[in-house]
Image (cartoon, rainbow, N blue to C red; front, side, top):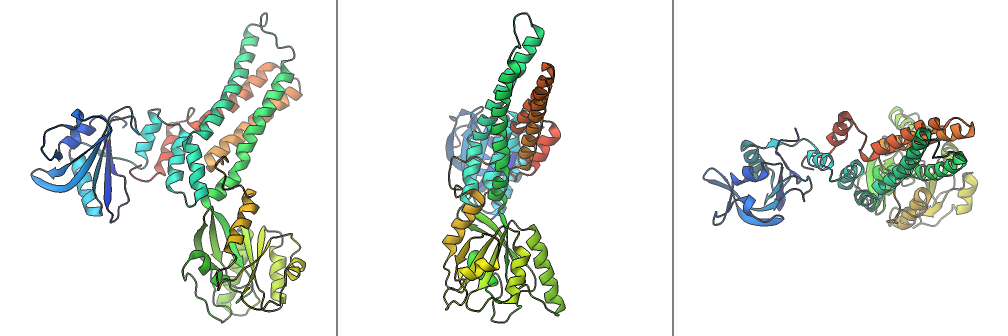
Length: 460
């Protein structure tokens, strides 16, 4: 399949100023030559210098389809390491599709999702960790996700994995050489030396693996549930954070009877917000279903925003909710700070046994949001989420491989502790080496590669 010349629309299928049709493969220039004419129609694309752009028109026979700019990029200095042509046409679904149909009609094959990036990987331009970073970058929902994807794209993870592999490979080679030539290569004192090396590698791999939890929060967002008794301002808070009237707000208690979900971004972090029904004892059947659903979301939440109305005294309902959430990671929000307060921070501290942050907000006036963002960053990222130096693992595939590396290194440690023969060390070190190699794509199978790139968008 990699011998075909492929084509796809690489920009969003919607109205816009520009649309781009990307063509990659050995026949790219010949195919586009059949439909592209310069103003004077004097040259073929192959005769143009690489990485140049040219003004002209797309024709279907004698009929002009669009006025375009065509980029010419010759192998191997391209994204795919193949000859690439990009047709920059006017944006719009119909124009882009007509030009793509012409390209396919003249010999190209419609690209599969992620096939351009797949070819970049198969042709050795990028490793698998960089390829996965491409899709992470495209789907980034906040600045932290962008920065982390760029770190992967720059090869930060690749460099770390490569260095770890080199250290493991050196030890494997030494053991094998010593076993093959014991007269010239001594293993005396080697277990103690190897133990220190393995400990150092284990520490670095463990740090990468431990970063996955933070990485998941950066990439997917923090599952955040807003809880509180009825009419404390939960829906007003949701509306404030989402930036529009997402939920109905009235002065009547029990307005929200089901969960309302919204993803919001606070510059560096994303919250998967869930506004729940006010938790209270009720005989209303529908409202009670909402209360039970709220309790279920509390169990699965990464973060609870416990919202309290400071303009009215603490009630039994507040106390019941506090007991329900005290084992969770939570932030207490003292809402309605624009009114005279009858509830203090001391009251909240006596209500919740957990040492949780307490923030004064006014959902009505929009105050307290910056404090909320900084508190979330501190709770989940030690306040360092904005650092460009941090490297986080965001993919479950990479995390599973790292877990396997740690398990193999634990086996080496066990063999060292039990004084087993050196070939035991070599076997488990080799397993660790293979799992590290799978992260960057040097030990993979076709099914895994196809599964990874099938999740990409068309045209990338």
